Image 1 (tube, one colour):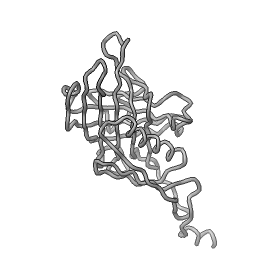
Image 2 (cartoon, helix red, strand yellow; image 1 turned 90 degrees about the horizontal axis):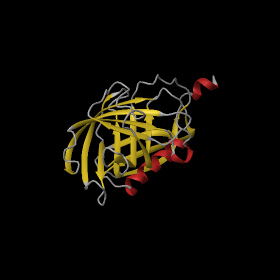
Image 3 (cartoon, one colour; image 1 turned 120 degrees about the vertical axis):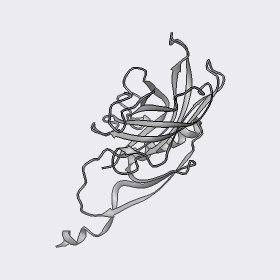
Image 4 (cartoon, helix red, strand yellow; image 1 turned 60 degrees about the horizontal axis):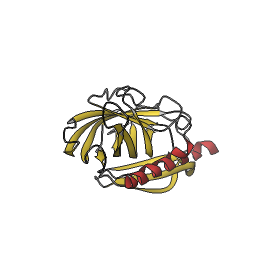
Length: 235
């Protein structure tokens, strides 16, 4: 009887925190995360400031409370991805010289399932003083799918695949595709990564809402040398 009544009582969730991610593009994500995901989100938000690409977010948190009992539903492929930082691309075909690309990313599926997004932004900025002139792309993700079939980072890696539409282009990125795909690999909080850094790849196509392409472990993919990616699957 005690257990039956307890299912309706709110209790503190051990090791979980309620977080609200608010970005200056008007989007907001409210969810519940564990300690590792909270640290990873914090790193991602800080990286947006350290490596600016025109997207800024803030993170607020509070103690998570929920009712005892209940059954977890099967993972439907939805969730969110948040990231900030920079990676390198080759200056020419030789690949000897490289240049930095800053990024800022926030995207959330509209429902618990893979597919259309609820707002969000994916920005790319080429800072000045490199082999490639300054450039910038502002884009809006239109489709997001998450592959969380592997162990949760940092024990494994989770993947996200985006399809985005460019709304603003300038400088060296003025010829960037109007619609493009991107693949992202989350290997966990940088302080705990054991299987290498997060990775990203950009392409002119995407399989979203199906997992697989473009492959952040495949041809043309790049390690995220500074910053962090956080992928959170809805369970």
